[in-house]
Length: 368
Image 1 (spheres, one colour):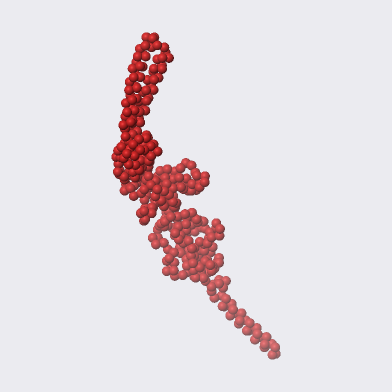
Image 2 (spheres, rainbow, N blue to C red; image 1 turned 60 degrees about the vertical axis):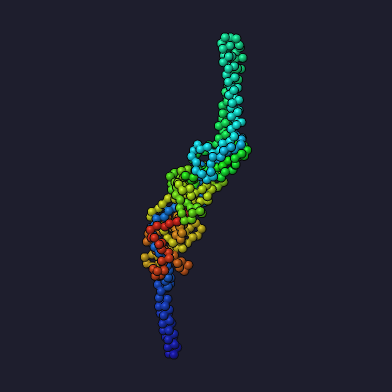
């Protein structure tokens, strides 16, 4: 009898303990897992610009090193350093004394040669000289004529003219200085329009076209953006760098930009008005595979594979895998597993992950 009573008491205690354990295990959600508090934000449609950022160089529209085509002594310098000159303006004149004398000598020889030619022509028609003698006289006359033309050209080369309108650079000579054909007199630069030159990777060439806008900055004018249009795309690819040279023209009426300046170029490749964008901390990566935790309608976390597009400051564009309004977890992913219940943090906690303007994302974007 006593044994039976002890058996009943032990069985009753076991049942009570088991019932208590089940009650404790069941408090927290399905499967007995307590919800994890996370911060989640909605995937949103926003405008993004796909731009290519690359270092480039500013080049003058036209730039030439001014040299004389003949040797001589600088007699007259007809420009001031930094002066704007028009096309055809005489810049430098060399001493013409010797050249003018050479022209006079050549013209005298030509006059004598012409007289001999006229006399030989009459004699040849009268059959008083041979064909060979007449041709020799005619050849001498032609050589003298060419000599006069050459001497006159040498005399003309003693004056150096501006080949186009522009700004004259530093003066490299002084009056009375003996110069040669290799002597640099000055430089002439056209800055009314400048060129921005940049090398673009070949994978982006399909997105380029003539007339496309380009923005860039220079260190001399921080915070100021200059704009131009693409006018040249090289038909050849550099085999060493796998890039193509692209040029843009930029109006430069105030001559702020100078040739040789280093430029930070932003080339707009395309604009997407309704791209799906999420905060970058929400994305988990495994090699080339990307995924996010999404909070479903039952309040559980589910893993969703995605395909990413552009990386923006603090943001990622999602090409596939998400819809606008999907709630993605940005904080607390380390404690989650697929199907785990979640508890959303107050809206104020998600404020740092929300874009301030709400509609557009500005800044340079690069491929993820």
